[in-house]
Image (tube, rainbow, N blue to C red; front, side, top):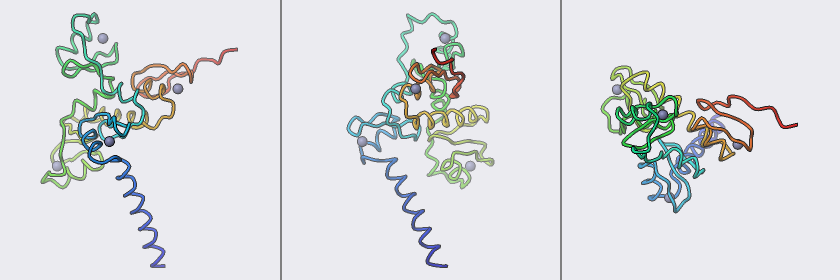
Length: 203
Ligand SMILES: [Zn+2]
Ligand SMILES: [Zn+2]
Ligand SMILES: [Zn+2]
Ligand SMILES: [Zn+2]
């Protein structure tokens, strides 16, 4: 019995080590990219809030767009630029003059957290697993910390959408999932990360 158990543990340990290795594939260049939520041109894959992304279009969408203030016509967007908030109508959130898909914005509004160095054990655990530390009243997800429970809740939901989009095989579905858009090829529309409706197939 004993050898079987230890073999099982060995298998699990290898699987976990494999996961870690693939998350940081490519070494230093990717480690830097992971820290900056950037695309690693050398290894042709990117990172966003700890999620490994192979779809360049998805990574571009997550990275947001520079806002041209003079061309801004939507009142909600103008307000979002002023307050660093979101425009519900256009489904974008603004940080430092860049417009992001709502899901990306919800994660990016958190403060970059290096909870591994935290003195609080609850925080270290929460940061590892993406959870809430009751004693410090702070939540962690995607390498960021959140002091407000509602904001944290939105970040958790959004991080799930981003993770799912990163796993989606169809590149244009992945982007549509993030931007509340449509994928004409698959004939599907997304809202808040969920496929909302499929139009009737053409006759
Ligand atoms: Zn790399
Ligand atoms: Zn707007
Ligand atoms: Zn704590
Ligand atoms: Zn598709």
